[in-house]
Picture 1 (cartoon, rainbow, N blue to C red):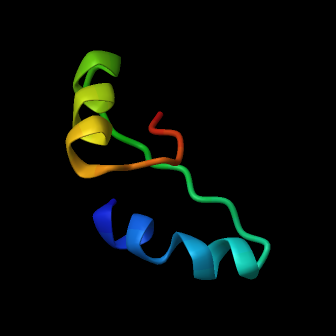
Picture 2 (cartoon, rainbow, N blue to C red):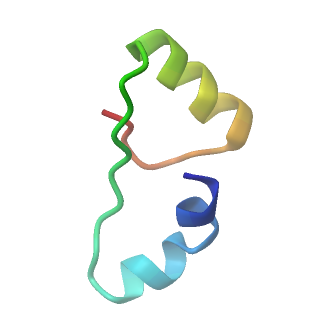
Picture 3 (cartoon, one colour):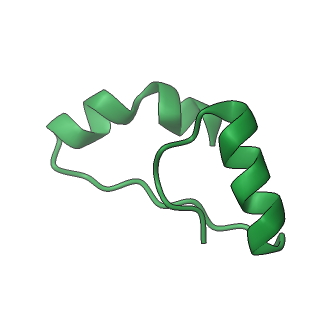
Length: 43
């Protein structure tokens, strides 16, 4: 997910959307996003 975050500008420029998919709980996903600076949705 961090690699996608690092390349989010290029993805957006290519008119693509980033979505993360994880089997973890919403709480765990939210914490992971906070700690790693993930700005796209984690499902």
